[in-house]
Amino acid sequence: RDMERMVFETGKPNVNTERYTDPSGIEHTMSTKKAVFDDGSGNRYLVGTIRDITELEDTKRALEGRTHDLGERVKELRSLFALSNLVVQNEFDVPATLQAAAELIPPAFQSPDITVGRIVFDGATYTSDGFRETPRVLSSDMIVDGVVRGRIEAFLVLEDPDDPLDDIPPESTAGFLNEEQDLLDEFARRLGLALTRLNAHRALGDSEKRLRSNLLRTV
Image (cartoon, rainbow, N blue to C red; front, side):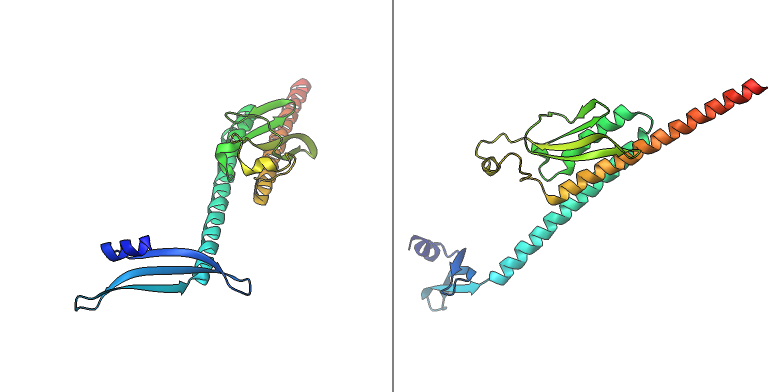
């Protein structure tokens, strides 16, 4: 009644969206509009209309979901592009490459503000800024020359005691997207390939040095 009085006094329409479940149990989204109608003779009436906008709202939610998913995929592609760039730039500096790669992990994830990254390789550890180990972790092995030499990890750091994830067992991967495990696997794969190529390059260099040394001895 108060809303109707306000609409009548101000002349400003009021539009409201409500959820309604029909007798068969199907839920609908209803749009209600209340407005003042003037018949031109000085008579003013309060008119109400109701529309079922269920299909429209469902389409809107689906579009928003797809837009969000597309944004996540773009973010992942950017992170992989950045990873490829730093591998090229720091090809012969393994610690610099792995440290920079660890810093790329949080921005690539859905919730970068509560995500931290760690890379462990040959006993050395490289972490993103503000790193803290927690029970909520995704992990992927780094394979170099067919051997597991380390791992790359992403952790969720929850600070809010009211976070709904706190009600889920710590060993669960809740809070992570399935695609984020795929992304971490791709990070590990690309780093493993880069380090394998580096080992091959070094082995080739060592072989050339030995060959030169042997040739010099025969001269």
